[in-house]
Image (cartoon, rainbow, N blue to C red; front, side, top):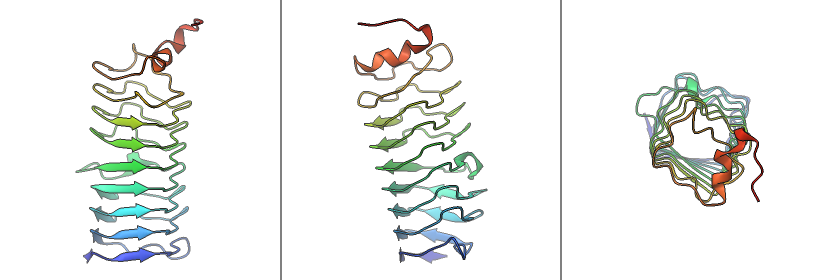
Length: 186
């Protein structure tokens, strides 16, 4: 097990991160672009300004992980190990990421670009979407109960296809719940 190590400016696109367990480690400005971090366990780790675009994460364990300023384009999070999956995102680009059927209760997305991200059948109970761009995001049979959308924008959520009981929206954002009806609100 690797513990309490700082990995800085490491390029894992040529040689992948060695498989194993990483606990309480910090990865800063590392490049995992199109790399393979499958079958690796990360516990209480922070990834700061890293590029994970198109990284493979088959059976990767992500327990209490913080992504800060990371690029996660097209990451297939649904391939991760779902056991104890716990994520937090701040100032990240998650365009085209997939969270299909994952349990992500209380997950926080702060100042993130979530354009075209897929949350189909995910459990996002009490998730916080704080100042996120949610253009063309996919919510289909998603549990969004008690989720907070008050400061986010560009979302379109079908209340008939998703569970939104006690979800929080701003007055301006309520328009995103009516998109499917193609009505004009003035």
